[in-house]
Image (tube, rainbow, N blue to C red; front, side, top):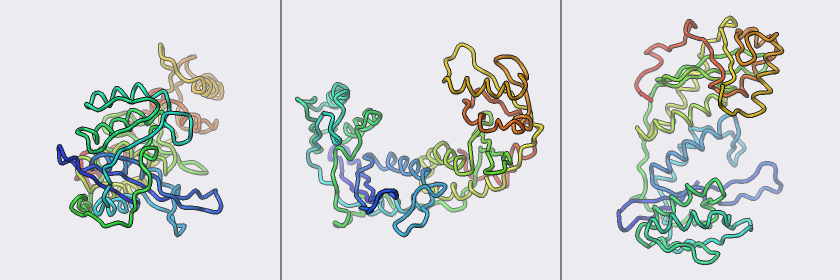
Length: 342
């Protein structure tokens, strides 16, 4: 990981360009390469870093030594880089509109021009994007450009090349290392559905109704993106501790009784994907058409008996209701859930 920093001369805000050196495990020979991944303020960067860390759960990301990188370890490494950034030269950012690999989609030309003009910068001229990072409001304009264009491929690596990570560090531009130890999980409920291969989990955050969250690594990924990111924004330094606490929290999750009622319904007046309609109908037939053509009233045990747990994962959370009010462990004790309101 490498963070490069520059200062907005008009506002004094520090902006960071985050780059990673990676290699693909299924490509040989492996040639690690640097790539710019994010540009933004300190808070925006930390939100992105915590969100990215969810992709490390379950052994999806490994270090150069072949060992798994955990979400907590990943965030910790980024904190080190953010505390000691190198200088990001404030030159002219340039990119072409076209169909080449490093080009920006021509579909974005009008959107890019609108953003630039809104920030008082020149619009796109011809087939090239040019932004002088020293111009007033140029840095926040670049942040907005990357946000509005991300779905169509306007990524930081199209705008910035390699920033030497071995140049002199500028700690005065960094974010001081801060970690909060002993944070507890609060406002989250988790239940376990025992399965022969990998257990499935049901989770609820805040006042929402319980929903399928997938396998062990999936429930932790979901927790990181939905709960840890806002918690880190509210209390910087808390992410790693919350993730470690939640992993133990999941291990201790109570098992859902097979007698728990489950109601599955097709919403009316709303268009849903064809695969969800298909899975609903297949499940209805396997269960012997319990209920009506749009509502299935059954139990978790009956769904499991016909191999329907997998189908529940495909259905939207609004379509499945687990009636867990009387289940043991539906609300964790204050000793387990304390300290931090998410």
